[in-house]
Length: 42
Image: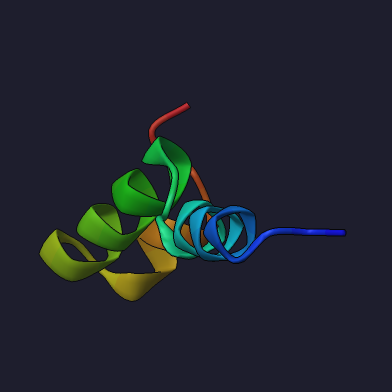
């Protein structure tokens, strides 16, 4: 049987964005939104 603590921990870990998501969002907010979709620097 799955405990309540496990379910809460799994939910929190799932909802926390990873570093890739944070980088993509910051790029989209500071530059053009197209820059967050396509990596135009390389």
